[in-house]
Length: 158
Picture 1 (cartoon, rainbow, N blue to C red):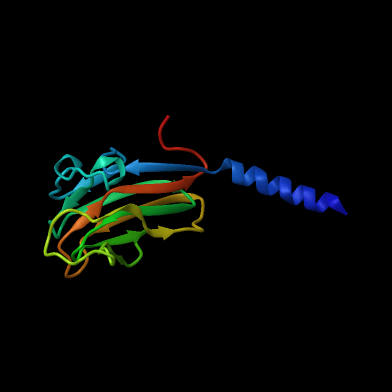
Picture 2 (picture 1 turned 30 degrees about the vertical axis):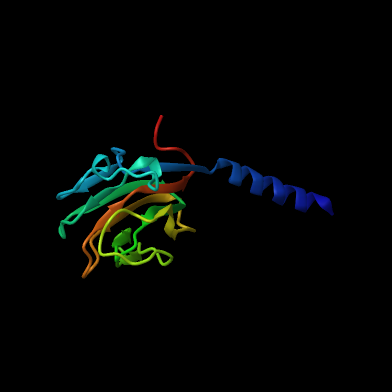
């Protein structure tokens, strides 16, 4: 009676143990930037993952990240004014991610007001190669890249 349960539990533990979380910061060479971008060194903040974020105001710019895995999480701080970024996974239509801090008193501009956290995720993906592209949303003014957290069966770095 217990044997099927033990075998199922053993299989689950073996699969779960094989997965690895890894986080890619915005200044990592695994992210390819096209167009005009301001580096993380121009946008330093203790609210950012790794101490800074990369930003573009170029409507034709993009940030491309290719990974192999079963999930990806987009992390970014929040601002006290309208900030959005559009994300597209594997060529699907873009999803507009709102990075406006709902708890902050609105301002016209300035630094972020809430720390970097997961603001978008794609889970339950096939364990295959995927491509995430960040672009400017229609009517948006910014593209923000702070960090990407992936779940894979192996880390991207040796």
